[in-house]
Image 1: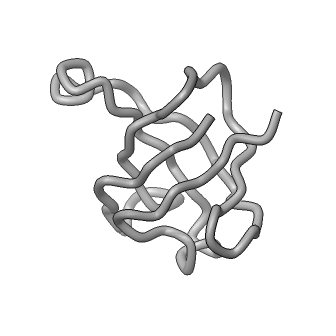
Image 2: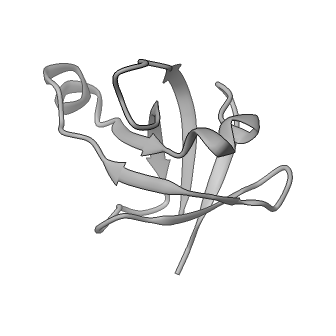
Length: 83
């Protein structure tokens, strides 16, 4: 299963980066363990954010990702879910 990043928001009041994306080839259950497809590095997900009217309509998912992993948080990147 892959998570493809479509938008990134850095909201100072939040604990991590807000990452919006689409899931390909599966469905998330709980907080996923993700690995960046380009670098192979682990991406630390702090949590899955609440659905919004937009994400309900588009089927996208919102993740909160540790700011220490900002190098792997770019629109267009993909992460693989580790089972």
